[in-house]
Amino acid sequence: MKKISTRKTRATDEMRAEYRFDYRKARPNRFAARKKERLIVILDPDVSQVFDKPETVNNVLRALIATMPKSKMTVG
Image (cartoon, rainbow, N blue to C red; front, top):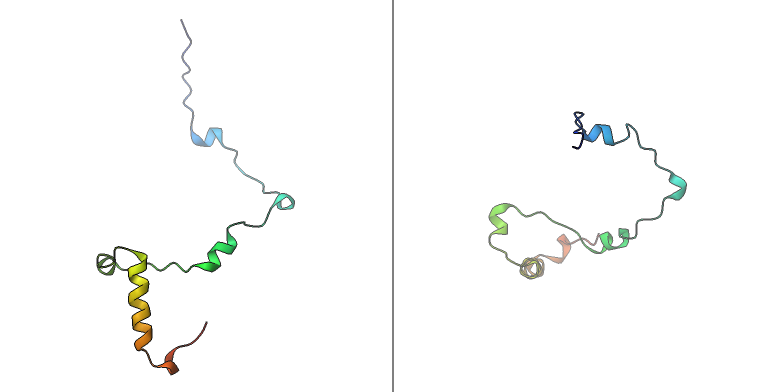
């Protein structure tokens, strides 16, 4: 017959109380360059129901930009 442990294990028992990060072994984030390529925008729920694809949103925004006066547009 096997012995049954009466001690309950918890996540706190299995994890160390403190983790130390060795900055000497740190490497640059390989995904950082991708973040510069895109800007993520969160749409409100009512707006997101209208657009099913990112391309649709981009097309509508480009059409809106085309109607804007040139003096209002800034390059960032």
